[in-house]
Image 1 (cartoon, helix red, strand yellow):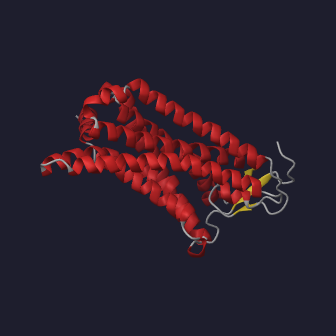
Image 2 (tube, helix red, strand yellow):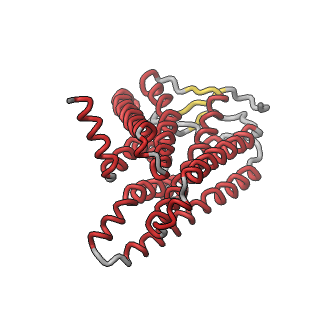
Image 3 (cartoon, one colour):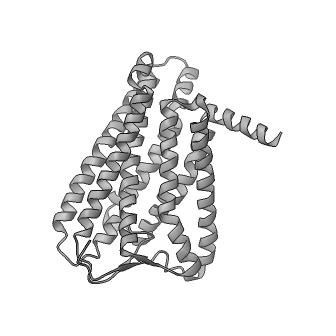
Length: 307
């Protein structure tokens, strides 16, 4: 696969906090369990209850799968490091993390953009919603999001595996994140960095613009509603998605767009923990607490189980 002399990498994780490793283990194992339980419940609810077989909830089901996948890519190995100190990951294991990191990041970009378009049609073109956002269109958008994520992840791994790794094998991060792995290459990576930058800009720019334009129209339409109650009711249909959008892009800004002069490696790790652990844990709560239909369905399930 590569002519590298390195066959394994060392994830440094939070090595600067040796006395807190056990405490961090219990904190993150709790986060991981809550993430899996919360997202499993919401995805099962959306899949099994025919009442939720609508575009918005199909996208939410995709989001739940993405959240569980991202946490499962990062947290199990991080928990192993906290508990046993085993911070070694094989070359193939590292490339696997790079693949899934790119796959899930790209897919989430596209799914969030698709959800923004769904809310735009529902609020701005309600009479034509069933035409523009049929279940077939929804499934096609979801399928294309995952397919583009897989293709992009495969391309990035191919590019990185063409590099030679013959020096340090220490990744100063909590997982094999793309930019941190490339830093370790002892070959000329200028062309690869440029290609990754161009691809990343294109893939990130189009969904971002689509999301921004959708919400400009949504907010404009809401402001035209005469009654305060009507504005509140309409805004509530997209408030949970808007909250997730703001968290997602806020963290990405912190990870990739902050000036290097004001950015440290520790901050990079914190942002990654937020993205891989905290946000996937909070997303089911945001969607369930801010969505009356989900709250009613969960309440019915709770009454059925306990009464």
